[in-house]
Length: 186
Image 1 (cartoon, one colour):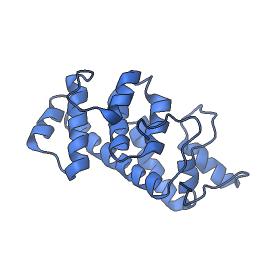
Image 2 (image 1 turned 180 degrees about the horizontal axis):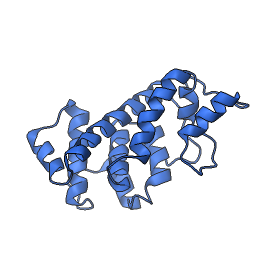
Image 3 (image 1 turned 60 degrees about the vertical axis):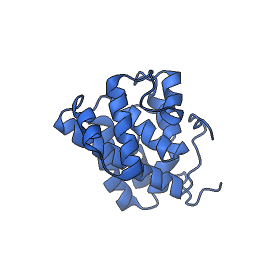
């Protein structure tokens, strides 16, 4: 697989350097992600995307555990090795996902005993959205048992946002980061 859009390359012009580092969480010293370098090929679009992405990642109402489970499942269901691998390498441990659960985000079902009722509800909802772009009354009720209304709305935006990111990463065939986890089964 050859990456279809090359990311910007160093040395970066000052504005590009500032923009790339705004994508990265505070204190991270690693080189900006290739996804961000690719998006910087269209700086205006990247700027608009960064606001929502950062808002969901850093300022969301969902817990880190909920957020990362949703992102992992969306990435897995979309076959997005890039985003799944980046998030699982970076956040799985701090989000409290065991190595077994990390693998189950790709290979398992929401009904696996490794999941709590809350996690199962999130996974059921992601799976339904992936399959139908809708939520049944049952899936919605399952979410609402665990999430308040603003959190449920954020869940919908989060799942949709990471589906968009999967489209970008898969469509541009962005090469995996060398430190990312490999998607099981690939």
